[in-house]
Amino acid sequence: MPELPEVETVVRGIRPWLVGRTIQTVWCNREKQIKHLNLVAFQERILDQQFVNVNRRAKYIVCDLTHDTLIIHLKMTGRLYIGETDNANEVDRWVHLKLGLDDGNQLHFSDCRQFGEIHLVADKASILGKLGVEPLSEAFDLAVFNQQLHQRKRIIKPLLMDQTFLAGVGNIYADESLFRANIHPLRVSDTLRESEVTALHHHIRAVLQEGIEREGSSVSWYRTANGKRGEMQDQLAVYNRTNQPCITCGHPIQKIIVGQRGTHFCPQCQMNLTSG
DNA sequence: CGGACAACCTGGCGGC
DNA sequence: TGCCGCCAGGTTGTCC
Image (tube, rainbow, N blue to C red; front, side):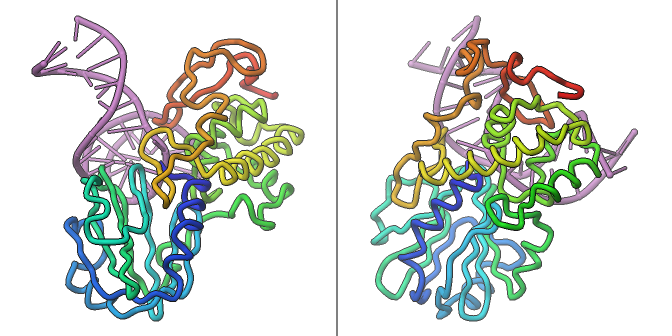
């Protein structure tokens, strides 16, 4: 579910409830989702630590605690929200971790498919160290991006989703960025013309920014920290629009598989497979 | 180096 | 209604 805009929205939603709070209780019924530690060790180590800050890096939620860093990845169906009491969210069958706070609130981690990951580490670089550049940061430089695309010979769509190359773009926003930039998803990275790279650089940032402003895309499982659906799903031009008319030219949107992922594009607007 | 594929899981949906 | 196969906002390890 969650790509950069969704994770950013969740972080903004939970941060005010967490910063300054101390963890007093731990409940967990899916020990497997806690990585590198068993439940007892996790519990002993996290109890009495305070949330100092809550941020996002790529698709990770990064909580700086007094002594350690709590890092959560939502993968496909993870949700994170504040449950006010022990049974406030009894309708949610998929809550697997609850952290009780010193103000009586609880942080709930819910995850239907159980792919999500919870890390408690002293050294956050052990988890975040290999991630690529944040696309919304100043460090995402056009000239460097252009150079890196030409140093590789990779199919462009999977490359955009490679978290060590660019951090935070997933299936929805990769498809949308390529559509906006008029680039076929199967183009090879070193064949992109400078004008195409410029457009891609711009549209990656623009579509992610719009995603954040609309609080993410709720295609299925994703909800904000308030339990609401996002609104970006209504603005998507190609994702999930197979056979529907292209908003630019009216041609039916096509779906193919690229790097094992469903890939949506307009065969008319994103026509060129070789040199743009 | 790049790409294809299976695996990790559960649930929703379309088709028959 | 019911069963079946397919699909899903992600990542990792293996193999060629």
